[in-house]
Length: 597
Image (cartoon, rainbow, N blue to C red; front, top):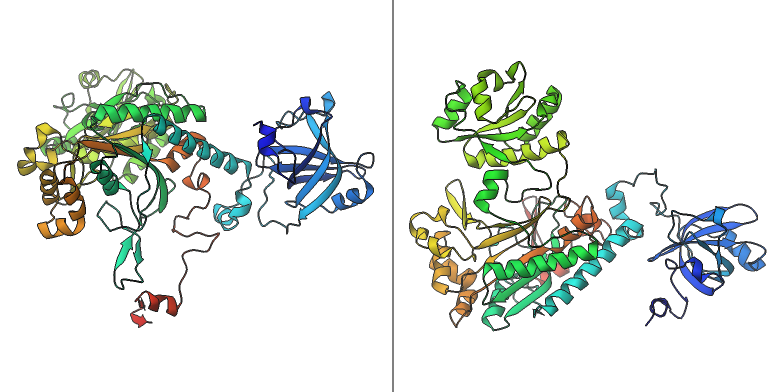
């Protein structure tokens, strides 16, 4: 079937975006929206828009019948019209290089207004110098906002990426299985969205934060390789790269090692990147979590530029500076980043980097410049040439330093690294920086309380299982994250297929046997009937599309997104419900201390 056959309907003969000079002289019927109009008196020009693009339609007394010419003069922006006529090649001097269809125009012989649009609340057509309306206004009038070329291109790329995902997974023996949306609440690190049951009053479903437990059960059931383009829900605070409902590429496979999963997924990413015109050379480099934190202060480092954190504890061992001495004596370290040529940064530029560090929670940032005259700055005045040499500081370099325990200095220096690279305009050495970060710790700790670093199903390294009883915080997991240009694209691990080991990890997390049975009994029951070794990953489709399109926000790659206040402005959700609906669910609404029916 040709492209023209695909585009043809009973109303139109083709879409507008593919018209070219070789189509000159062809008769056609086009339909779409009036993007822009220009009335020159004798001639009227309309840019006609559909999903495929724009074409200039001309109306004139020489080729348009009189009745249609009169109708055309009443056309308004965003009216939906049907035009019949001839594709004409423009003269060389009249061609528009800014339009894909700029070699031609469509000479309309007659026109029919299919839909008369009211004056749009926000403009769809914008001159290049025009700014977008405020985002809240665009979300209120999302139907108009979605007509923008940029958003339509984003969503069409998203479609192609989802299609390629399905084709790739099918080629590699994976089958797509849908898992429940109405499910059971399980702790996965965020609050659940709860759905009251009308049939079982006082009981609630939860919308899934992920299909994690179901996909493990599918492995126990013998499906061997599963994937799903899964809708997931998390009731958490929003930001530019987070939405309460999102889509992930969910993957699980049996009888696998970490290398199996990583090879499949980096192959998938290379296929998706090719669709988007992005480079993804294989294999992706790997760093352990410890290496990534040591060298970059982050488990999702941006490797587009070369700037690593250095350990200067030994180099500054005899520096007589109270801040450094007190932190090192308390068990901390002296670490920082060294900017070659960074001594040229102004005091104001350094203060901007300091402010970024303080915003990340750091109490402050030390710095030292080296020049021909010696070292300067809050730390520099305590350094002699031997110290500067030991730190690797050459003349013209700037050192940005943080002293203290790694749990504080690592995130600080990750922020400093990014801020320094931006301020110093470090050259991009790799435009598309892919990375696997592996061997994450199974547990993390906050205020003396252990919690799962990824989730409570991560298989510990076999060498570390003995530490579950004595030093759980040191247990490494068979967990891995995929990072692209400093953004986490996905996270996964091998899973525990031994139900007793799974129980042990849940106990380490503070759950007693009754809680384990209540929350995870159906998983443990499934594991006990013969579970294969298995593992997988979940990749954020929204985030992938956002980064591949260069969009500033997830809201630019989701058709109907929520605001940062978790509101859907176009639909007007969430809303209150009536007393009858609440009564049917067995609920009462408490408001301002009162109980209302």
